[in-house]
Length: 477
Image (cartoon, rainbow, N blue to C red; front, side, top):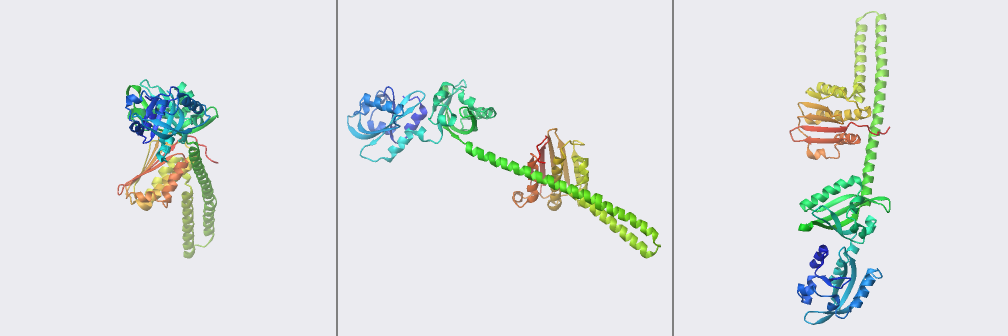
């Protein structure tokens, strides 16, 4: 009978009257259960039948003429009314639809029939089933991997050329041709998923790129198939390949847009930091310097005045006022951009821990495996800001009694952790779009090509982890 088991199974599961004949010899290869019941022949008897013996009104020459028309593409389908003969000799008038299907092992003439006097919708569905490769939006295929590991296609529908740029015969002749189409970067994932599917007998779901030489173009395809263990014949998959290049292009455009937004965000942060640095410098150098000069000049003036209680009181008050103003300028300048950043990221984070310890009155433990990290200032400032924001959140919300800041340099990656023993972060609040502090930290780290994670439990504290690659990056200037 029919060696193309996937098609035979499809026919057996059909509730319609479907016949498959060898297009060359006209021998009957398979019939659906509906045909078996109606013709009343045994399986052995059907195996010996030929098309003219069942369709008694048609001769072998007529059938061969139909086959020639279908094989050459002169017509895609032939519909005619004829007579069918059962085992008991009875006959009935039927409408017969004929189509041609080229399989790897045989050229098949497929016949779908229904009663000539009955409009039978199911027969029309069977006709579509018989011509399934022409109606599926993609490439219908069957492939087999033998016990030696060789993978070969048993069947490829006519959509093969449209999807892979080559006719089915090219893949039948060369078992390695399909693998050679897969671009180098995606070959390993294909091997892994094929092997996993074969071992587990689980669905094969693979997406990858193939190079179409005829069109000088890469194409994304999705391959979905169901495996079946054929014993000594190996594993057989039946499934569908579809072109997903358009959806992948859309995904890549979205990712590119996100990358550009991240780069823009990093660029804007860089501009803000430059402006903060300018203001900090102006405050420290100009305003701070002017106040210091003013204090010196006033001291000179006080010495020229007669020493009276009133003059001494005014001198003390003005000196204290100037000192407080200078202190405020230094604090504002440090908040804008700590000058300690010029000494490096490690020194800046150590300073930050000490500052928060003095302000909050709880211990801030700073630990690091290095005294200095060679890093681009355009990276160190955003990293400092993320840790600074994390410390500010602890001060405002955590109700913690101790905080630790860890910095670890692996040579290729910088790991930072900010750990507190406070009340934790509510899960809903963590994903709340109004949590701008958390979102800002995550976006800063993402813009640096890093990873930002939060681990927290109610009354169990919070761990904020930051992973940033220590590699040269193309930053926007």
